[in-house]
Length: 357
Image (tube, rainbow, N blue to C red; front, side, top):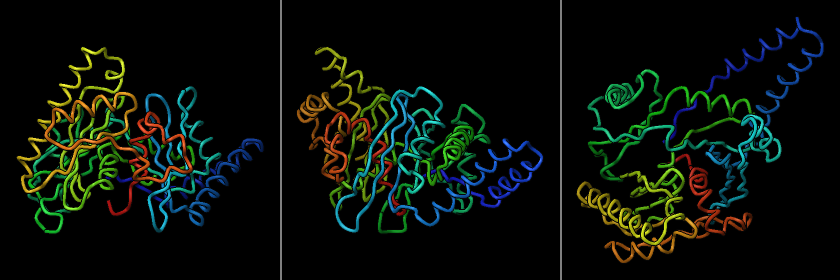
């Protein structure tokens, strides 16, 4: 799933022609400045066409700054994390910061995807409408209009189907609708365009987490994955690379880090109860699937204590993920640290995006 990023080469060309035409009537110093910008756009387009890397750049704009992960996929072996870097202060213009990253890291050579934050979209579970595939998005807009706190006409909507049988034609009676304000999508498109980046896809954390689960799943079994960050918790259950369940938790990683022993016990109990409810719901809806285990995303210091509590109180196998088990981190040794893996977790997941999922 990714929000469609429309491209219109004709419109882009018209814009360049307009800039060049208007420049004729401007003073020489302004005319030269505009022509330089036009040439820069043409160079970026040409460079992207002839030397586009087979890798992917995933970029997320978080409250603490801009996080970027560059991943390449060799013919054999694990995906390789070529670079992972951030501008964590967020002081200054984000366009300028991104543009500098593009120049220094040659990001224009990568297929770029952008990861939205939790508060920038809604993921809604809805009944599958009985309409042809070509009419699905229009029907979805009508279905979700009463679930939104803004007009449905101002929404960008995409769909994530939930299959009943990966190998069969039957589809489930429900699906995920991903909804974001047009203004947010437009603002991000303009931001990346101004920085000289060709934005290929806009993703959400649930899909980024699904990408990681798809690598971890044992064949023929489902997998649950729980991550915690400043936005709270996210539990997903996947099977055969498809997202079947997603649940948000209000408990954040900061709360676990700052809690005293009494508060920590309460938070662990609350997490366990929410996980158990979600697992029970999954078993009721998909009783034909067997859950292999629950995996905890990297979370630094709070991880071992939470692992121990869940192991004692959940009737499931529980383990903590080390990203080095599914990605080659030899070029990014700082990512061997669990705290750094937590910071980049969702961005790493977005960078694992492939055309087939």
